[in-house]
Image (cartoon, rainbow, N blue to C red; front, side, top):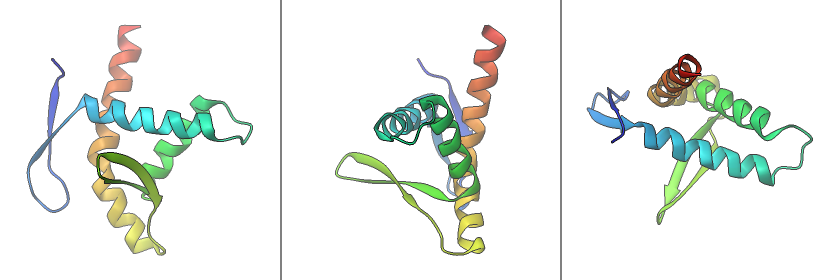
Length: 104
């Protein structure tokens, strides 16, 4: 059973986010990294996508059971607002990375 972390999104609505969401986003980023042909390793592309996500330059989108990303915000205010929404997922990703590092 996956551990769950309680988070509070910017809107103030309580929700539960678990490690599965981070794994799904990692899988999405991996798929994008494998399809890109830009000369970087998949790991570097994934790390870069997480940085863009953290800074609010991209956001997760979905429809009909499919997940993707899209560019976010044409100005700094929109990017900062998106970064705030992305923060709980980024925080959980960091916690998972620390736990993996400690375990190894």
